[in-house]
Structures are given as structure tokens and as C-alpha cells.
Amino acid sequence: MFLIRLIILLAIVVILMWLLKRLFSADPEPEQLESGRSENMRQCKYCGVHVPESSVVSVNQEPYCSQEHADLDQH
Image (cartoon, rainbow, N blue to C red):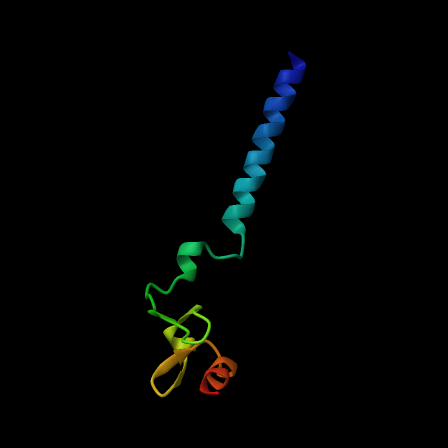
């Protein structure tokens, strides 16, 4: 009987410590990381990888994931 009570008490302590750590953690929750806006993705003409529009390198109105791929596709 004593062993069962000890295991239950230990489980309660572990759960409380986990909850307190999560409550006072400096890490923001994933919902807080998102700014609420989404961004369109574009496909690199050279390799096919999708990248956010803000990261696209445009050459002759064609999207590339990097300047290197834009240069390679021009040859």
C-alpha cells in the first residue's frame, strides 16, 4: 500500500513541476509565434522547391529559390 501511495505522490509532483515549468517558461506558445498572416509560396523554376514569395529571387519575372539557381538556369 505504501508503494502505491509513493508512486501516486511522485506522479502528482512530476505533473505539477511540468505544469509550473510550462506556465512560467519564457518560450512563447506556437500560436503566439504566428503573426496571423499567410504568405504565398512560389516554385523555383530551376529545382522545383517551393519558397515564400518574400524569399523569391525573380529574374525576367521567373521565380528562383536562390541567385545561384537563377544564374544556372540562364546558361
